[in-house]
Image 1 (cartoon, rainbow, N blue to C red):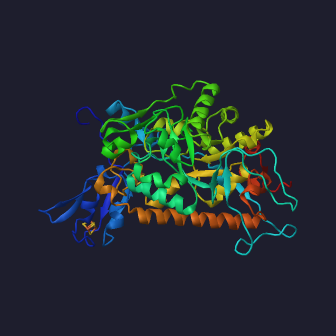
Image 2 (tube, protein in one colour; image 1 turned 135 degrees about the vertical axis):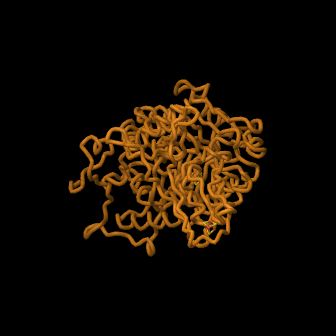
Image 3 (spheres, rainbow, N blue to C red; image 1 turned 90 degrees about the horizontal axis):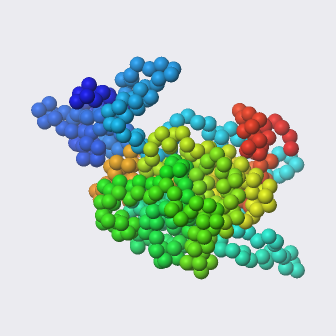
Length: 506
Ligand code: SF4
Ligand code: SF4
């Protein structure tokens, strides 16, 4: 104990092979957390383990592969009731008196329902489709759909959408990540990749930097409770407008961008003073009912001459189906639901780890409710918060989604190593930082390329899986729950998901 504080041993150990180390000091220069230093007297490199966040930057750049980062074996005496982590957290709060903050999604072990759902494939009587040789439609349109389709004399569809739509070449969008929480180069990567892929990225609640207006056709502009960076040109710039009511990683609370991340560019874009904390309140102070929400939805439609679809984004919470029903009746065109495993730049970790419900169950409940009420075509449904792969996308669409948002997967494609310290402004990979030296570490050309690669690979896999199911369009897959079967799920879970158990026939 020092100064009345309980000593917490470092979580990670830097292991360096003195045999391999050539004292080039690259690790020292590359680490923004000041872990490595050179001891001239001993002519050797040393490490301050307590500063290490396990971001693996040094491991990646070391030219001789001299470094390993190990999870420390130094654990408090634990038992089945009090784990090392739980003990550590109590000590931490007793030392600081503060709320614990964390980044990214919950690390706790909750069920991942995607992994308990299996996909059907065609055999014998219903032929599969070869996506390389036969047409396969991955395009999807988000927005309110017409009640009727009209065909011409030759049977061709001639229906025109009467409500504005967002057209996506693949049913995938990049989740909301604000300029401020992530860097200029990360935003540039997302904007360029979305444009090349024919999908959308999302400004988050930080406004739109003037350099990114040319990417407007592939941008969702967000309006959150803080209204940062919201003005008439901003609203007109995007393909759609998203009202953020909630976020999966922190349902029920607002956002917080620390002042150290609010440099001149971020301050101008957000329209707030430089260096000030950007705190968005938990509620929108003008929304206390569905009627109030409707007013904002229609204000935004009025402001954009009814040319932009309006998305309402909520976190997946206990009564999500009823809330979604209200949103569908508010005039919104699209509902985005963020599951409680969703990532974030900073959230109180108790809320992140304990509040909300899994996106799979929320999606099953919402799609069923909207169908039962006969209003499913009034809105599109987009889900996010733990989409890890192309098959998660297929399962989400078969459960009833029109498209998905991906956040953490997109950051991983940019080089994120999940060190969970985004709130510190020290991201060694140039993503969640405003430090100009660190930002340069992410080359937006390479960032955009990796994002394009990821989504193109997923799109290809989606086509392969759909082909195997004998389905040739996202439209035919949407809500096709007969194509799914559950394993290791109880009756209640199956009921909410609206699927049968593996082995059960139609
Ligand atoms: S980067 Fe590798 S070789 Fe260079 S000083 Fe660090 S550990 Fe040694
Ligand atoms: S974005 Fe950067 S700081 Fe955040 S988890 Fe990834 S590597 Fe760590």
